[in-house]
Image (tube, rainbow, N blue to C red):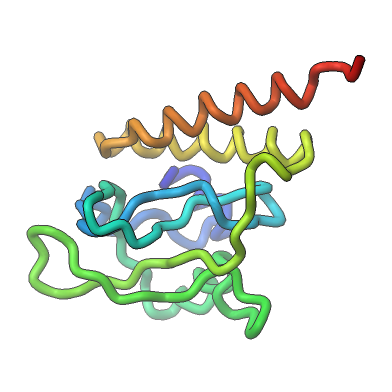
Amino acid sequence: MNEKKFKRDMKGKAGLINKTTATLSGFKRTLSNKSELHGAAFSIRCSPSDEVEGICHDIPIELLEDFLKKEGVLKGDASSYRLVKVSILNENEPILTLCGLKPVSLDKLSLKKTKRALNYVKESIQGAECCDAKHSDMKEMKKKLEDLIRTKEKPAK
């Protein structure tokens, strides 16, 4: 989560309130959800032997609808994500997070959308670094996207 990007996406209405890093066990982060804006976006997927560290933050109730619209949750059958309740380490209460509903294969993205996905991942890495969140998976994804772009840019023989 990149705070500058979040503020931009929320049209300056909110930043990351009460942000902390947190670990979610039994899940992993994947760049596997279709995004009109980014080509592909991060999502979490059940993975019993894994854990993912990310940034938790509050959303003021008066901005909840704006946030859910931004994330593509309020589109009925066309929703990009669904809200799920999860438990995180060192927290007494469960939290809400988003799971992707529109799987996408990075290999099938156009060159333009692959480049957008790379920019999105770079912004996400910056956000993780600002909060000291573990993000080696994001760095691996960045390399994979860079390799994909080189492959897609090669002229056909």
